[in-house]
Length: 352
Ligand SMILES: Nc1ncnc2c1ncn2[C@@H]1O[C@H](COP(=O)(O)OP(=O)(O)OP(=O)(O)O)[C@@H](O)[C@H]1O
Image 1 (tube, protein in one colour):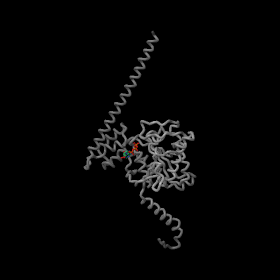
Image 2 (tube, protein in one colour):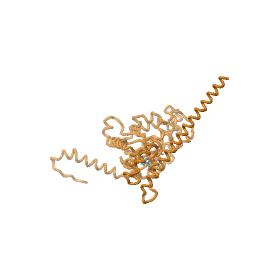
Image 3 (cartoon, rainbow, N blue to C red):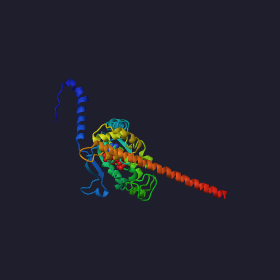
Image 4 (spheres, rainbow, N blue to C red):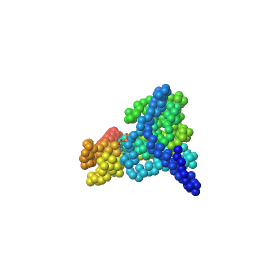
């Protein structure tokens, strides 16, 4: 127990400013010092019994931060501002009558940093991460229970949402999506029949999960969906208000390369940067590929060799893209040629 002594004429100052400041700092310190966790949902067969749990967790020790995330600086800053606004917005959300939650849709090609961004968000906010594997959830009832057992100050993540469930709006039979990383769970739409609703996770179940129940579960939760194919998602799922912010993670630009060069090679400038800047303007390469090329192969980091390796890879990618484009043009011409010969043949027939 602490005793605070002060002159009575400072009473107003102490009540209005000093004590709230001490309390806020104390809470912030507790949050800063708490061990953050990465949760994954268990299949429902493991929920009952003495050790039964809906979620299992490990320590969250991902080192990614916004400082090490390669991204156009203005865009990065606006995401940080948005997160800060959310974290400090308890009273604001209450004043506008909205649940204290925010949804982010991260979309872009593989290896552009979607998972890395989630880790950076969690580290920035000091939040836990709940990695929700939808394919392990049998139906809406399970989804509800899983959600209720999440805590505040957390980011709930559904990665590759287009691969996890079928959100095309059509009822489908079980099928394997050959191009997808994950096996799809077949889903009926909100209009789906009762038997399906009892045995499957539905789009409406997922929508409830996002906004309906949310309001009853206390606040300070962020939900993040990631996808490589934004166009495949049902508009209802990603409409503004549900997914408040749509963030495109794109191929490496010169600015993101500079962050990676600083991370991997500890350099801020180099005579080869000019050439790399030019090539990055011409070639699409994911930050993951750029990072892989920049990674030194031995302890005595040879900066020149790493940068030249990247230049070589960029040139190769450029040649491949050119070759592909040429094949595309040839194919087109061939088809056109076929069409032409067909039409002349037809004309010939007509003439006959
Ligand atoms: N923007 C970035 N900044 C820094 N590192 C990045 C970035 N993008 C990718 N990386 C590096 O590439 C690796 C793979 O990236 P990550 O898993 O975040 O990509 P992703 O977009 O989630 O890919 P996928 O769509 O295949 O899941 C990361 O471990 C990280 O080292």
